[in-house]
Image (cartoon, rainbow, N blue to C red):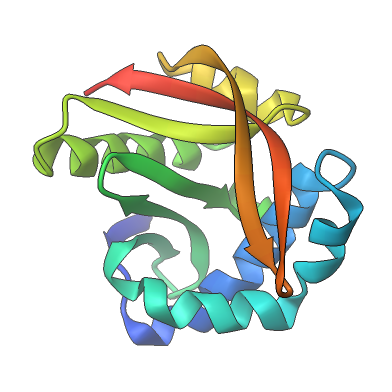
Length: 158
């Protein structure tokens, strides 16, 4: 059984570990090389503590983190599911929760950025009713530098 709930501070180390693994799995070879190098495990551990309030986690009955989403205003910023839970429908549940949060925040449309080369993620969002609205050169600051990551902007009415 899986529980989906708001994150707490004790979850964030596991969120950082999963985010690091998932980010590299979906982004390697699709973003600027310097950005990939800057996305160290330590960097993810530095980023996550400030994100507790906008993070929702999926955990097993044993307390293992299986996935998470981060929502900021009308943007679904992060959707990641760990390797042991991939393919079982958890990503769809987390995405639906993120959409619910955007709607409950008073927004009629949600958006997210997907790295252009991440075909698996793009297929997933399209399967769940998200629409590719075009190129989105997404600026990312990491390791003291700013990179432009080639992304696609997806939207969905919520």
